[in-house]
Image (tube, rainbow, N blue to C red):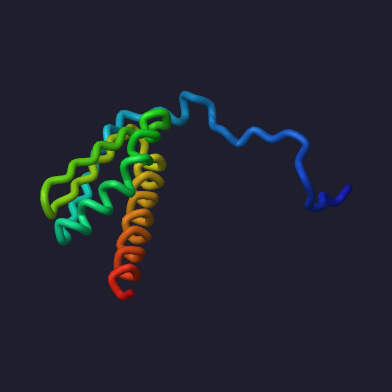
Amino acid sequence: MKQVGYGAAQSVDTRLPEEHTTSNFHIKATISITASKEEASAIYKALLPDAGSERRRRAAVKLEHESDHLTIEVTTEDLSSARAVIGSYLRLIRAASSTIEKIKQK
């Protein structure tokens, strides 16, 4: 029996057939943030470019900003997309918040 080694694959398709990936899920998640007016505005502006690009993927993202409150609404039809988009936005929020804090320290 020939032993299989590790290496680069010439051609691999890891996608599941469409019938195995469809579901009846409709996922809607809301992230609410309260911060100072300046911080909420800065985070909102930092997230805007990404919010427009999500519609092309499998998720829709809606941003709302009012005074010291920021709301991010994620709508998708599969769990993996919801998890990925929510995780991405939380990381972006953390990065923006960290940057704001560093600027304040100077």
